[in-house]
Image 1 (cartoon, rainbow, N blue to C red):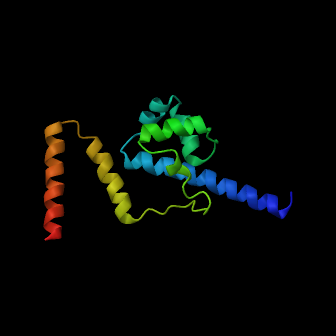
Image 2 (image 1 turned 90 degrees about the vertical axis):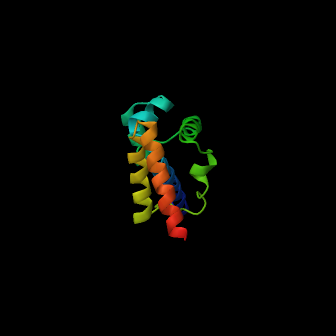
Image 3 (image 1 turned 120 degrees about the vertical axis):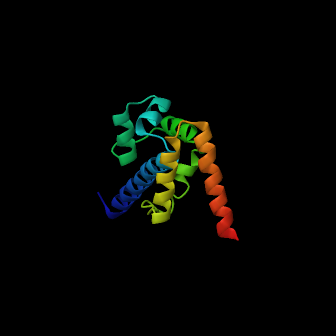
Length: 129
């Protein structure tokens, strides 16, 4: 294999890794478990894990199902493919947002959800003042 082929292969691996990371991070941001997303797209939890780790390649149709389940357009997953930005680094703030979202999704009582939402709105308004 020549140098150009290696560069192309590395670039494709970078794109695959970027897509896998976006699926993983978006699923977490939406507060979904791996099992929940797997059921929505019709695969096992283990298969979804392989997609999120980049171990298995995605077909476009499977990516479309994932995008739909996560509420994004398919192009969201490939928008930076030409730039090779495969390692989105989560800031501490982003990690906290994901954790808050996960915990909020665990609250089943709508009254409690509304109370948490009102609290967050109140704190955000106080910060702006």
